[in-house]
Length: 292
Ligand code: PRT
Ligand code: ZN
Image (cartoon, rainbow, N blue to C red):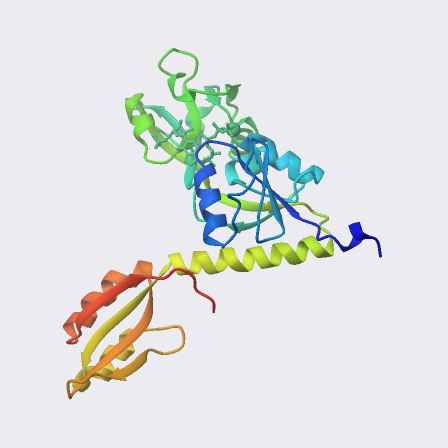
């Protein structure tokens, strides 16, 4: 075997160079224990402790690079993936970069459903997705592709409606527009090349395992509380836990310490019920990683 055959094939990951997804992408790698602080230059960086190389690119270019195999995988918004429509596998949702692709019209107008858009001019940077939406609804809108500041188009008489990404809604509001349809809910996702080598697939599986552990940890909280033994069964029944809650006797007779894991979204409801059932000294702490 030659030396080069012995070398690990690094998984090449494309992330956004700068912009809304850059920091979260870097943070996710860090939370996965991947250290790429060494040797960062403008184009690419290498991890010191994982067989991965990171390429920094414009988000619009990432699907093409992954289709071509210049990068093996990428982190990019679903909005870009579906607009570019490249031959890539769309995988794990990453939990950041959340937004929606919406149709918006002038605030004063009354919206009558998709037919409102018939023969209207729609300004957008997402012509492919808008065309699909119009076709699905059998509407004949006129698409005007523009690359930025889409929200000003109705105000300057360039369009009757727009289709753009929305997160807080303040851009639409400030431009006298209102959302009338959501055509895509989007967040950052992992995309992958369709022909990864066995070795790269294995590295990807290791990376995915870490990403999933980080995501699970974010969606869960660790809870510790003191429970009167008289109400222990009731309190335990309120706590799902990874298997079942841990119960330890307290120094004070008649009391136990109960430890468990709660889902972020059911957390407030359960806390209230625990208090009603006599739980005291409730501590809720974040979980850094969660391996199940
Ligand atoms: O330079 P490069 O091409 O890489 O970056 P870019 O300028 O094309 O993209 P960037 O950094 O703006 O966004 C990258 C990705 O972030 C998008 O493709 C989405 O997947 C995601 N994302 C999440 C958003 C938003 N939220 C968002 N709110 N992308 C853009 N916006 C814009 C939107 O276009 C509008 O102008 O923010 C404005 C609306 O925001 P609100 O909060 O006022 O509703
Ligand atoms: Zn872009």
